[in-house]
Amino acid sequence: HAVIPPRKNAKMWKPDTPEARARNEAMRSSKYLGRALWRHLTGYHRRSRVETKTHCVKLLGQRLSARGFNRQVAEIQIRAAILNGFTALGIPCTVAVG
Image (cartoon, rainbow, N blue to C red):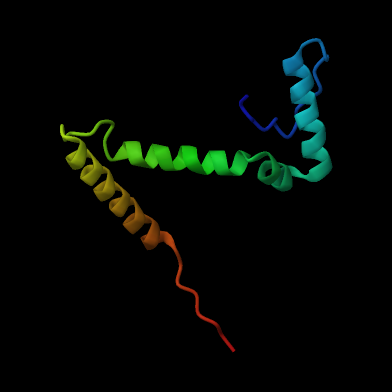
């Protein structure tokens, strides 16, 4: 089942169907725990990060151009190295002060 966070201004649905009951339960737990903790406990944050990284990989090309398996593996490793390089550029360097 997909875990989709309800909107902040979401209203409860009539509990006619299992889907509506699941959504209402997600809303109740989200309001009780807070959105950040709810996302962590349900695994939504991890899923969101995976979807974002998949999007980044696809920006480098929708398909592999290599035909052989070993070359495909090498192509994926190169893409991963490129993404890691881009990620490293965005991570700030912190220094202890005092």
